[in-house]
Amino acid sequence: MFSKTAKTPAKPPVKFDSTPAPLAADPSAQRKAPRAASLISENITIEGNVTGEGEVHIDGVVRGDVRVGKLTVGETGHIEGGVYAEAIEARGRIIGAVTAKQVRLYGTAYVDGDITHEQLAMETGAFFQGRSLKFQRQATPPTPAPSPLAQASAPAPTPGLAPKPV
Image (cartoon, rainbow, N blue to C red; front, side):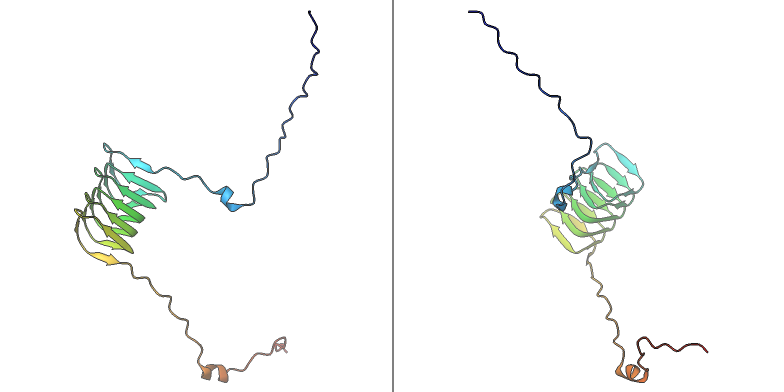
């Protein structure tokens, strides 16, 4: 009726390898996680320039130039100064020159200044006063080909036979 149960043997301790596992050779495995946009909230006023390479969302006021990778101006956002970015989405006010590859003005946007762009999109209701200037991609100047007369008059160098000083 009462029987003694057999004891199970003790488990061996777990060993941890102190060397880290090698990283995968696949470059997609080493991609950086997307970063969140920096936020200048509605009740913030910045007197000065804002610079960086990342993404910035402005709902407050910036009195100065803004140079970032991607800029979003919220409906309550207000910028007084030049704006330079790869891409700009504007729902608020920008008073100053705008320079970006892609510019999108939503229906609540108010822009008073020139816009230099590659692509410009405007929704119905957006206010824009200024000039729309399309980027002019500068063509690389062609390298002038040597004229046939210059090639014929110059003696052709002989490989491996350089004159020795006497």
